[in-house]
Length: 300
Image (tube, rainbow, N blue to C red):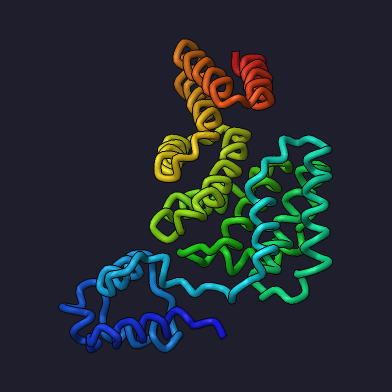
């Protein structure tokens, strides 16, 4: 049975021989009453309190978040392949994804815990939209989860994917009525590094990448530089430089649109192409060339 967050905190605190007054020190960051409510499951800690609790326990913050039950190795392989392999909007790649989803549904889906089912359902909605360009896929799923999602301060994997799904939808719909919520979700994503396992950073990264096209569409660059900096940090931490050309693309867009600096934008474009060539991704290089031409037509 899954251990609740409060139960885990209480168990670890007691294992370290710390009373609640000892744990809370002078109560300037966490009061005894707040700790009692958290441990009883009556309250969720804020991000700052979660940091404090983790520090007092001597553990990374993300380890306090309850994990799901042990899952089939083959299911985890299938999920990993769906999450990691880029589709490139290519029909053959989408066909390959269909086969992976089919195997999950046939052999594993109905025995999965609810959060894993939510992950699969959200991934399916994302790829249905990417394939069809029909933003209606996943409407009911997102409607069911949105109220709870907007209240969260610490995100798990399904939350990251739901926010990515949300961004894809509002981008396709060019929805200007949701700017405030979109900014809230992007800011929330940019605060998640401390709560995300290193091996899951690519999911956080893709959620951030998924949000920026929306802000480009509505010409809102308020968090653009912070997002690019966060993506750079993720790439450095994970040493996953395959996405570096896309970060350079984000740099050129900012220089071209917000700074009106064509020379700097072109320099980032050339760097992006060179990096794509260096990693041997001809398709990415072609996509970058097409995106540059589109940006020039739109902004010059």
